[in-house]
Length: 405
Ligand SMILES: *Cc1c(COP(=O)(O)O)cnc(C)c1O
Image 1: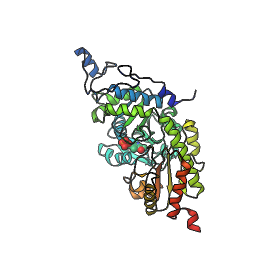
Image 2: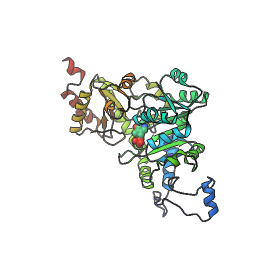
Image 3: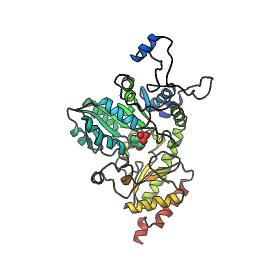
Image 4: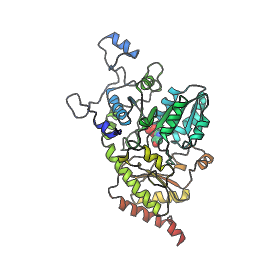
């Protein structure tokens, strides 16, 4: 039977201490033990269901983690203080000095900076490759390689990873396939396609209200236990712990994720089609012209669509800035980084979220200066939004028809 991620989330029921319809928030950093022996066993990792200290786990964090594990179809999950607080411990848990990582070259700027500038200090080297070229990925594997790292839909160029084929490659060479699924929650279920570890920045679509940062690692019980191990677990020791109050608030927002994703996708598809018809260089995985349209279609849980992210290229950074400022003035969205908000957000990745990537490399990967990344909002009347955005483009002479006539 086809995997239904939103059903899996909804089938979980948690009640509060007094029969509340939401679970009680655990307002404690530490927990009492009825016997000293149980405390000792818990430190040894042997006391199932006992809480020790909230950096290790807390009831609120476990509820949220279990809901996200249900969404991704993994055995379990652990939540973290941020998306980077999920990505960095996973890579440090899987790799040690002398090891090698193969990463997509189009990834979140923070992840890129971590792999490019930080992990080499620990003796961990990374090859950045075009993840859509399986032959290139395979050629980059060597005897030290431990991990293949990618985003299901990449930031900011919206390249789509063929997760099934990458998982087969990982299995063939005994590597771990780690997938950041932040851009495509519900739409793509990487673990179901063979990924070993699935990561999200909860800051984006999953929380959806731009009021917090958060992250999650979804994987096997064995791997999540390793991350939380008191003696050598990277999550436990690096300390990027989510606060219980936040966990409970993100869990409540997760309840509406399926409705939001459908609307984000519907609105993004609508705008992408119109922008393309207007002659703008538009990138959206839902367009048949997208180089990975077929791969996305094959992987996706159809009802959630192709996601809320699209890009257009308006030729230069000056054009991009002028258009973004005008659209913001017309209340069509905000000039801001991040994604997944009810309001449309736009930014020019070359000068913002991907600025960690040197200009030379930006050029090589096709990240042009005039690129605008949109996280399309939950606008009720997307036709009206389109007309207003088109008026902005006309005013600035950015539509091809203006340039010719
Ligand atoms: C934002 C983002 C991250 C980092 O998440 P934070 O919550 O900001 O730490 C990682 N990956 C992707 C794809 C992102 O968009």
